[in-house]
Image (cartoon, rainbow, N blue to C red; front, side, top):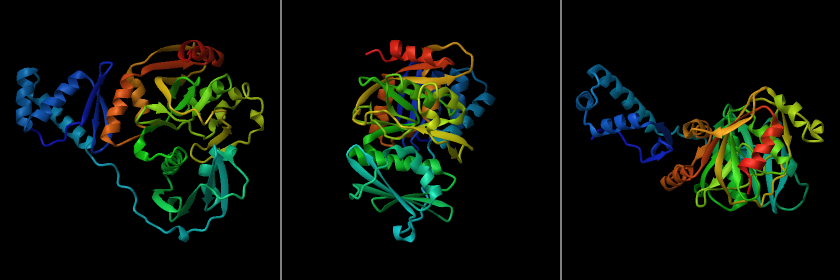
Length: 377
């Protein structure tokens, strides 16, 4: 037996093998041929044995066998490498001064967030400005967000979470989102299957997850659908509960990039009155649209994922998509639970999902597709 760690889980869905490695919490996709080669590798005690088996059973040359062996060796080393160790910079909350405190109301709970400066405030506040609430009541929970010596710090109920590099603002925002999600649902991180970089819309009975690389139009599409009778469950941060594999609502606003302003103003009457904010990450401007979602819409089943691809002047098409094309977008930008039990549930959930690719330029045609094909219950 080779001294490399085999994948903990292997699941075949729609002819594609999905491998999960426990030590690194990494998922990779393999076709049958490469999976067979991997199994040969794991069953061989050394390179000579591996080469002998390949040349004898698969009639592969010795030179090619050596190359395949080294490629598989490097792949397994990468898949079994431990995740990057978290920064260690424990620091007391009293170290910081906080210049502004904002209170938000989410359902019947009050959330207080204290910011050390205005730049730090802009990392969190614009997404939740629509929930700002003036009150003298004591908050149910409190966050503190601060920066010091090129690091960002997050405290939940005065307890230090972890620091992040200033260049990793998305990690701070992601951790804040997870902490907030757990607080407003009375759950723990281990209760979640994952939080997906996707927007999700619903008709109250079932949900559809919209995926796509930045700039492909998923947030724009979710805003348009929201103003045409569908409920927005989440924008860019879709939580899925492990136990039920169902979607939970997340209360952040929809972020619309400058390139979509002209499109959105045709659907939202007061869109031009919304203040545009400079985004330091993309170096463009963003407007945040207040969601019309119902925060009580939790435990919504989701068995459809749509890979969104907006292209100018193309006919609108919706077709079944290969699972690999969707997962290659879904997995890298999402947080997935490292628990073995949750990884099994994730793979079982994927087996029930229908994957689509949507290419479009006409928004009204897309609305019809969702009303007549994707969300008809």
